[in-house]
Image: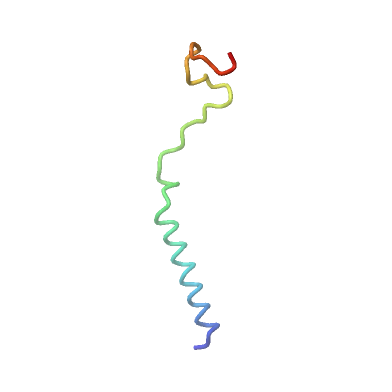
Length: 55
């Protein structure tokens, strides 16, 4: 078995392991959906009576 064949088998084996490990450890398809992003017009999280540096 020459070096090229060994490297080919090693590369295919590594790619297969990465592919299987990636799908086995991926929770993107089984996890809950992401919550909705509040968007740019969401209320400020602090009350209005907090002093700001600009005052």
